[in-house]
Image (cartoon, rainbow, N blue to C red; front, side, top):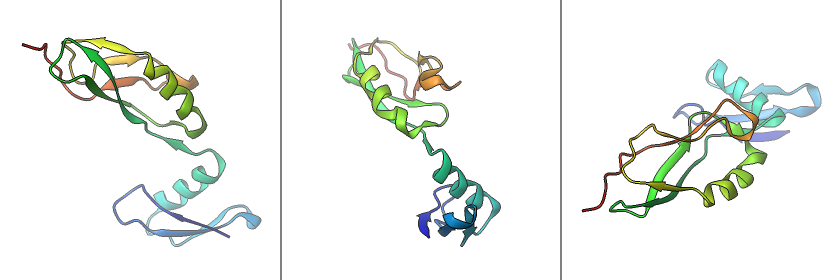
Length: 118
């Protein structure tokens, strides 16, 4: 029996998953909880939120995120890849930084407008 806390909605249901009986899920307050538990045990994914370097802006880091979930095991590799990214100001929120990362249709996009310094 595995226990998870559902992160799909703010309720934070405590889920119990019996992985011996085909991933039977109990404790969910809605159907999304069951889907979350099954996905978490079979193929966990996350949305990555981080920052990258930017030159020519007031701030030296620009916030970015994946615009969808990526496989959890790919996060470390994507972080190493993002470590070499350097943006040039100005950038707009929603601007694509990297396309189709980690073998998915997800892009890394900026989440803030960053004007030129000065």
